[in-house]
Length: 299
Image (tube, rainbow, N blue to C red):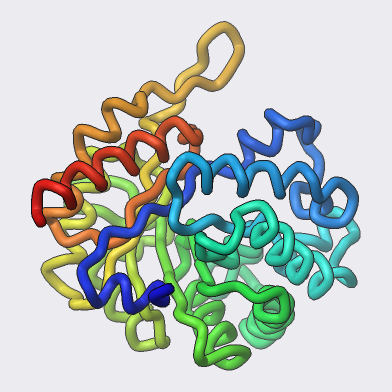
């Protein structure tokens, strides 16, 4: 089987998975629980989530480690189990997804604020990311996926930690942008242009955006990335902006709506397409169908 980077170099479109949290809750994770603890306590739940996404057509499934840094795990008194949690998560995702899918090690923000926004120590955050990446590498991930970042400095620390632990494993880095009158910026004021330049310099192999926007806005963000970098692009859109319906969070963008925008994504130059908050295996199945139809038409 080709490696992930070989597929991207051959201009094959890769399908990523969708949201993790809502799927974990579907299978019984209580609200307010530490999702990463399931890797130790109830591994059958994240395993089933990985299996669902692979069966829906995902080429890549993520580990249940979005909050797997020591800083984040410390909020639930699991910091000392950082390496074990991340290693087990990778093994569980591999078991659930089977031999025909790639496993991406998910790494989200720590929740700590670096200067000038806070007082977190960069060396401490870097050391924590090293611990998380080591666990993921020991578990056998094919890709590190540093995602939902707003602070470019923190994102770059995570990229550098991944490269220091396993330089042979590719690193994807995606940030979350909000629309403003001047374009798209993270909540820390980082532009798409600054993010692309900084993450590429830090060593990222794949760039892009996840979360915060529905698929139409993500097409616009992808346009900006495509103008300023030649690296492969990863886009994971939310299923729209969440709204409350009868006291429950609802995401309005349907799988069919997602599918209608896949060809646009591909024409912009996006090589990896998946989903974030509010997306389900049905969204990934729709993306898979649209990708397959496009590739069949193009051959």
